Image (cartoon, rainbow, N blue to C red; front, top):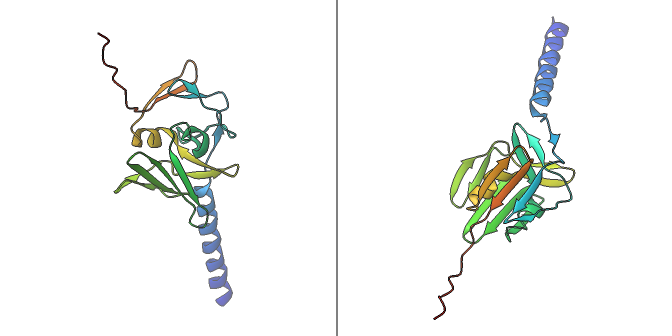
Length: 157
C-alpha cells in the first residue's frame, strides 16, 4: 500500500515537472534578414532580432541606444530600465508585466535572455517611448520614427 502511494506521488510530481518544463520552453526564431532603422539610420546590433510568438524582440542595447535612451541593467534582480526624456520603462526577465512610468502594463512576450543579451519587445518599447513603428513585409524592414523636437527657423527677411 505504501509503495503504491509512493509510486503515485512520484508520478504526479514527475508529471508536474514535465508540464512546467514544456510550458516554459519558448520557440525562438532568429530573424537575421530583418533590417531596423531608427530615424532613417540603420541599426546594427551584435545579436539579430528574434521572433517569439509573432513578436519581434531585439537586444535592448543597439536599438534603444539609437533612441539616445538611458539603459540600466540590474543583474541580481534580472531587471532592465529604459529612460528617454520623461518616460521610464522597467522590465524583469520573464515577467508578463512591465512598468511604464507609474502604470503596470501587460507584456507579451516578456523580456528574455538570448545569447547573453537582454531581448525586449521592439514595438512595445518603441511606442511606450513615443515612437511610431512600421513593418514592411516586402523588404523585411522595421522603420521607427522617434519623436524629436523640431526646431523652428524664423523666415529670413
